[in-house]
Figure 1 (tube, one colour):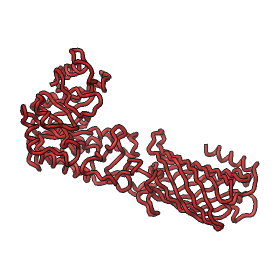
Figure 2 (cartoon, one colour):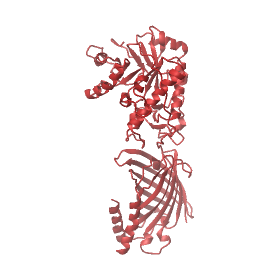
Figure 3 (cartoon, chains in turn red, blue):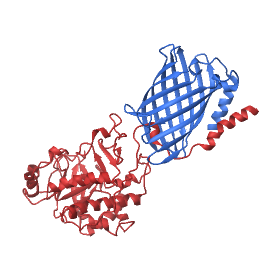
Length: 353
Length: 200
């Protein structure tokens, strides 16, 4: 009994001294989020660029052809800077002229993901990602995070990293060099990802901190285009992430309304419908409470809902028509996209545009 | 839970006795390279010291001390993580060609870039089956309990002694899961491992 008691004590000692500290993902090998330490400095403010002048917008991210767009009456076009996403597919000066002036005057914005890295882009090195696991390996830069399970080949990034921001600014330079009128910034809502403790990274920051870092990044993009590159009318349109406005009251090193003053409008997805399913009215209203601040500041709100099944004739009661009417009624510019979310065609039908 | 396991181990150990299986009669040193699943990701050195090596009879002969060093790189120098630990296993059942062990251990686990230190409690279970002299099948489950979460790693390892000397080759497959206390999974991994060691 005495001996057993000593044995028990020997076993229990580790119990008392153990089980402290964080959970190290590296214990299993494979991907581990390493917080970047090269955080970008506070960005300078820039003058607000031009405003969107058009009334009908086109959203096509794959295979956009200038000669096709020329024949439409969309006067705003959001496209990729390249036909296929790669350097070789960039549009020539002549094609950009066609896009901007063909048929009608048109403002052309380039899609730019600032919260996720895309593996087919010029900056991405295939060796950063393990062959089978498809997660960043130990050779990846610190800013490269988990792959987006809903969009294979896209990876979350620690967008506040100076290294990542330099890549985005180099990307922006290409867009400016190609004479786009502005950028359409995607994955703005990455600030919500990085403040979600269940993001799967084993690392998160407060939503306030994440929001401030995102606003700062958007300001930097605008400053780079409008001041450093001298494109004073350059349009900066974020997509989604309207909750950033909650933190636009001058928190930390930001001035009040920094974000609102910087952006030229906003793009919003799935405002009324998630696919073809109506979004809860309370969710729509909650989003509109923020979006309308941008609208009321005289800036355009572009709404894209993926409501078009592509079947049957469009009637006044068709979902696409209901969606467009509602958006117009609320003072927004609607674009009814195909339900598959591929955005690989000009979705034109009676009433659009 | 841990206490229950310990008590169970003590109870079972009191009613079972059998001949030792040859694979853990000597000091075993093994170097293991683990790929997740094919990319080399973890390297470790494991040293196993059986109580029977130093004691002839009684309680200590049923113990087995383990010491390990683990680093997350293809070489033993750590990339972002290094862990060094020690544990004691209790040979609960030892009958003929089979053994079952339960053990406790602890470690110092250091994440170099975050500069954070964790001290996990490691609870492990291992069964050993030796159907023939030159082959041993080990099935193990390691539970790692941290302050902010827990991990589990299950492994099946085949050990080969191709020669009459103490050289051991091993080949294993495992699956690991790590989660915070709210059961939010932080990481999962399929592991393949190869190793070489010597039984002194």
